[in-house]
Length: 113
Length: 110
Image (cartoon, rainbow over all chains, first blue to last red; front, side, top):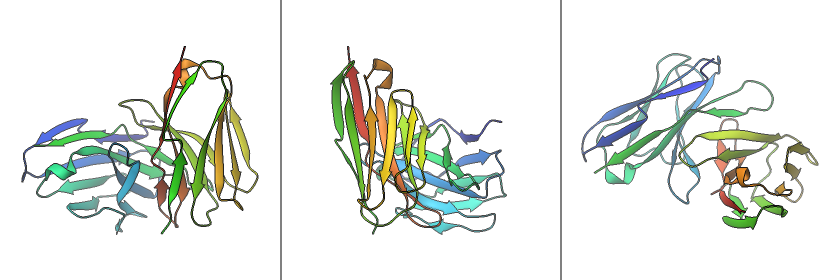
């Protein structure tokens, strides 16, 4: 099992450009999440999806959109990138077991100039 | 609003010493998680604590949970250099959400 995979690993954008971050999991998890990590801020939830076809806002959703394409895939889109969106983005999926443990992908390092 | 506070945020310690990282949270939660992150890497799950009084140990790390005090601790015994990393605690903030502390950056010096 690959677990949670993300593409790309690195990306540089210019202000105003758009891009989509891809995430996929092969653990048959229902719930998937997008976080951003900034220095000294821990991880902050951007959007999550409790099941295929549903999405909900997290703590910092402004400037982002998401799509739960199917049970495996959950994408994050930046329509018009801004320097404030420079960050490391992590995708995660959640176990259906009672622990509700989340498993994280390797991350995407995004720089917006 | 659920808040999670870790302290210290930075910890420099010598090999062989013991120390404790604290994680306080503001509202009732029945699940607490500890993660480790190495520089430039993703988060690795260390412990899942599911009930009051829960204690889990793995090698030189031991985590405990006191839900009445809204406090979890991560105790490091006889630290070694390989434990240098950033440690995060997180609380189940609702049916779906994890709320993370800001992390404790641990450096173990020879």
